[in-house]
Structures are given as C-alpha cells and as structure tokens.
Image (cartoon, rainbow over all chains, first blue to last red; front, side, top):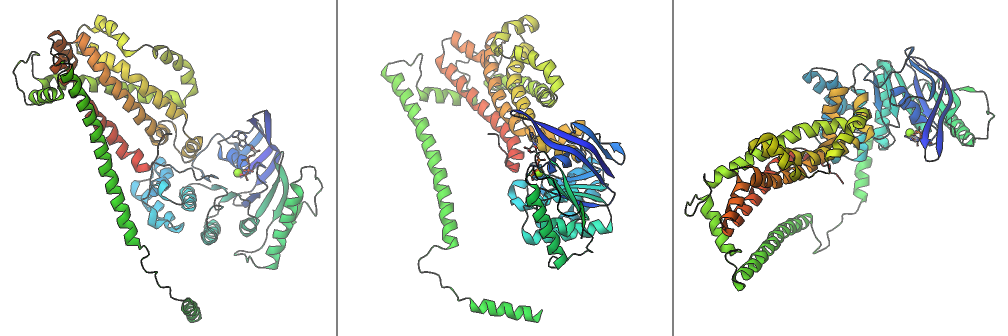
Length: 263
Length: 301
Ligand SMILES: Nc1ncnc2c1ncn2[C@@H]1O[C@H](COP(=O)(O)OP(=O)(O)OP(=O)(O)O)[C@@H](O)[C@H]1O
Ligand SMILES: [Mg+2]
C-alpha cells in the first residue's frame, strides 16, 4: 500500500537545515493499522504530511499503490494535529465539505454527514459554528470530516483523540477499530499515548529523534477487543515505555531484545 | 442494574442537603443585574455621543454670533433649517438647476458604479495575486507603481480622456477605491492560515473551487476592511471629481454655492454628503459583515 524508500526530509531553519527525517525505509501493507509513536519532534507529523501529499520529501521515494505521491486528494482522509476547521462553515458544513467537493448529491452528503456526527457524539451541535465549540468538540469535528469521505481507503490521523476527554476517547477508539474491522482500510495513526497505540495497532512504529528515524517495530497480535487490564497488555506497554526512554538518547544505538517484537 | 441504582441512591443520600445562605445572590439576580448593566451602558453611550455633538453645535453657534460671521459661518440653526428646506424641496433662492435629490442620486450612482467596478476588479485580482506567487511577481510592481499617485491627480487626465462627463468622474472614483480594496484583499489572501489551504486541498478542493470555498471566505474580514476604506475614498473623490469635471451632482452644488457666496448651501451640501456616506457604509459593509464575519466570529487583528 505505502512504501517509503530512503526518505530524507530537511526543513529550512533559522540557522541552517533541520534534519527532520533520516533514511526512512518502511512498508505498510494494505489494511494494516499502524501506529507511529515517538518523542516530540521526531518527525511523525512530517511523515504523515508527506504521505498526505502536502509536503514533498527532500529525497527518496514514497509510493502509494506503487506510484509516487503527486499531491493531496480525497482518496486519503486526514485528521491534522490541529483541528483546522473552516470557521465560515457550521459543524455540519465542515463535515459535508469533502463530500460536496466530490459532487455527491446534496441529500446524500447531508445524510452521511449527519450520521457520522451522531457517531462522534456531536449530533446536538451540528448547526453551530466552530467558535461555539469546546476544544475537544472541534477535534471530534475534524475526525468526523475525515471519516465522512466515502472513497478514502487510507486514513491519516495525527493525534486525533489527544485533546478529547477519556470517556469520549475510548468510545471513539472502539468505533474506529469497529469500522476498520468491518470495512478494512489502511490506517496510519500518530499518537504519543502508548496505551492507545497498544490498544489500536496491528503494528507499532517507535521513531527516534534528532534526526527523526525508525527506531523499532512492535507487532501486536493480541485479539480484539483488547483488554487493557490484561498482563500481556501491561507487559507490552512497559516494554515500549522502557524502549522509548532508552532511544530518546540519540547516541544510544544498540537495541534491547530482538528488532521485531511480537506480543 | 438494580445494584447500581441502589448504590447511586445511597451515595445521593449521603450528601447533606445544602441550604442557601440568606441574602446570597441567585442566578435570577445575576441575570437581571447583567441586563440592567447593558441597558444602562447603551443609554450612557447615546447620551455621551449627544453631549459631544451638542458641544460642537454650541461652539459653532457662539463663533458665528460672537464674531458676527453669519455670511461665511451661518449658525447651526440656519444650516439645519436649510437642510430641512432642501429635503422638502423648498425652491426659494434655489440656484442649482434640478432639485437636490437629483444631484444626490447622480452622485450616489457615480460613486456606486466607480466603487462597484473597483470591487469587481480588485477583489478577484487581490485573491489571485495573494495566492499565486508567479502572478505576484509579474503584477505586483505594476500595481505598486500606480499606488502613490493620489486619485485626485487623475482628474486632469480623466477630463482629457472622457471630457466633462459621468465617465471622467466614475474613472477617478474607480482609481481611488481600487487600491485600498486591492491591497487589503491581497494581504488577506496571502496571510491565510496555510493549514486551511492544506485542509481544503486534502478534502478535494482544487483551483476555482479552492478559491471559492476556502480562499474567498477566509479573506472576507480583510475584504470588508478594504471596502470600508475604499467606500470612504469613493465619497471623497466623487465630490472632488464633480467639482472639477461635472455640471451635476453634489460636488457641482458645492462649487456653485461657493461661486454664489452661499455658505449656508455649502454647509448644507456637506451635511448631506456626510449622511449619505454614512448610510452607504451602513448598507453595504455592515450588511456584508452581519452575514459573514459576525456570524463566524472571525476578526482581523
Ligand atoms: N514547517 C516547518 N518548518 C521548519 N521546521 C519544521 C517544520 N515542521 C516541522 N519542523 C521541524 O521538524 C521536526 C519534526 O517535526 P514534526 O512536526 O514532524 O514532529 P512530530 O514528531 O510530529 O512532533 P509532535 O509529537 O510534537 O507533534 C521538528 O524538529 C520541527 O522543529
Ligand atoms: Mg506532530
């Protein structure tokens, strides 16, 4: 589905270039749920934006369905790290945006948007403008806007639930897993919540900072729905936490345990 | 289910009932107080504005009477009487051809045509140049070169090109209203939060759709600012243009009043200009703002 080969990315900084991604090689098979975690500034959002087609990598190649990514498009549903809502549209209007751009009929777009808004728990504020919402509500609108896209077989989500309260977050996580298991699609999910990553992912990519690069993969084989209180769950969480602390030091190079861990 | 509800009951029973402290403020008190506060503030604002205007009128009256300047500075009462007389078409000592409404309507029409043309060109151009760097590199120097030339400097050339006519006046109004409209729109379009453009593109808006559904609404606060300045400029320039290049309109009336040494008529015409200018601003810009930025609660810094 997605293949990254020798991807490097540099941003222009105040004094010289910032090496945001270094020699990123990775393959995401179709229908995989991949969670990307790592300390702040390790290039998670940058990689997501490259796949979205918003940022062009400095060198290397990123292939989507075998072809280089030409630009952004509604074949990929995206949730940005900030809500990025259109202030001039109501909540409903924001969710309908992507559908209207694709010439879906008015009635169908409305119906679909309303249904998704009910799911994210915003049925009662559909006609409000973004400024009238709380921060967490705005993030949920952004999630609904991405989920509403009919033809997106790839979901790119950048810390979509991190600003949402614990109860709603669990509901949304369950809903996301539920829809994903019913109509399979590929999900690239950035988070810094280890618990969330272990709960959701097929595979977890731990990235390392300065420069941003691949640290290590963790396969999560536990059957769903996963039990957050199981010993296996806690064990994997502890291992990832430990590994994250260790790799935060850029000089540390050896890996503890096998390079691919399976739980 | 049953066990849960009983525990809930027990929990509720364990909380002691609180009794309101006597004389403490209730929500109703709070709301009534806030309502009264708003009402008082509104009354106070109107009152203070009236005091300011009255102060000006008193000062004006004293100047006029104390120095016996009625001929060049008629008293406020004389001017107000004349405003009323003009609006009720009192024809005594009427020296300006058709009645005042005809002059006002002509000026209004010219201002609106000039302003309308300026908006029709400046807003799309501003959006395009603001968003497309290549276009900006080609056109920004051209537009910037014209900018320092004040609208009034175009009047002689306009007369040369269009003669003493409507067109000449409309042309200078256009030249005056264009720049504030263009520069505001361009700055607004250039400064749009890039994330909004990204979102628009990711959700399938391209080219014209992106301009119509994202760039234009995101720039509206800047456009209304440009409109306000452009409209003010248009009204100033209509008067200057008509004074020099027309035989009708409120500017012509002003010039004629001076030739006839009728200070009362001069000041009356000025008051009418102020009123019409205020009303057009209210009608056009405020109406747009009510339907856009105020509804979306977005403002420019
Ligand atoms: N537009 C930009 N211009 C310059 N530098 C940038 C830009 N965007 C990101 N960077 C830099 O690139 C690096 C990676 O940023 P990125 O946003 O990908 O991090 P992240 O892993 O998403 O972090 P976080 O968890 O805080 O969101 C950072 O050092 C950041 O300073
Ligand atoms: Mg990020």
